[in-house]
Length: 214
Image (cartoon, rainbow, N blue to C red; front, side, top):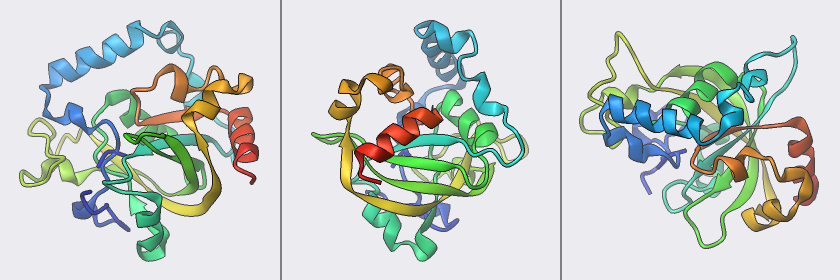
């Protein structure tokens, strides 16, 4: 996620979590679009539709994801203290990540929570999608840190989901460990590190859970 702003909780986006890519919010729409085009150009597999599978699924099929948050802004412990251990994941200001939130995530999907911006970045726990994509109204609030003057209520640009904590890992999985694990060499976390929301394959999900002792 992108924000210590006291985190967005149980639907109260004013106290929202800061997903790791909110820096794009201040850029003009054209520049943000150019950034995402650059992301595609630098990752040919993405341009060829490597992630197309994320948006197609069989009835009842569960998908897997990873979201980033800076612990000094909003940590997994903060999430556990929220009512119902649930929070809205607002503040994402990257088009690719937005698409994953809006069109990819479905109720019941499992989501790794990754602490970024620290000396030792790591996957610290797991959530489930408790509410599917809906408009991130923090973009309309001029006093909010996630404000985007170009996003309008009648034509919203940004979306969020609600996440509910499922498990806090007693053995967090560090980025270094992920990079050293052969089955994880193509993981989006490693290949497209700038994304604050990214897909995780079922194989990757199982490997990481095993590494975390789950």
